Figure: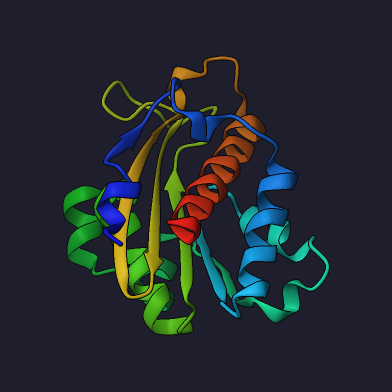
Length: 182
């Protein structure tokens, strides 16, 4: 399996990963993990624990979840997930490089088979022309392979802060499902 063939560089509004039921997708991912005796960990920034909350909402999740960390600050990204300060200084917290480093750090910290990380701008403030609200990067580590992608959620102007956070969760779990089933 080539992770880069599944986790493409970016996903926009027309992508099928941005459709579907969050509850069903999470349930399917957790069921697959349980059936295959795999584990999962999350490292979250803009979602603030939503990914791990959704996983633990499924009965039996204790069989699969290893760790859930909310690394909202750069300091915690560095301290807990070992994101190099040079990456944060050069690319910023909201970047493909940071999401990738978060996934790599989480993989080493937790030892989970599947690691899911997110960093981005949920708004309503904080965005710029170069980095608009709705810019989200998701990192994935699966079986010692790592990739990160851009989720262009600014293409959904109707989404508010909570909508961006929930759409992020949907996209991450849809991509996790793709990885697991590949």
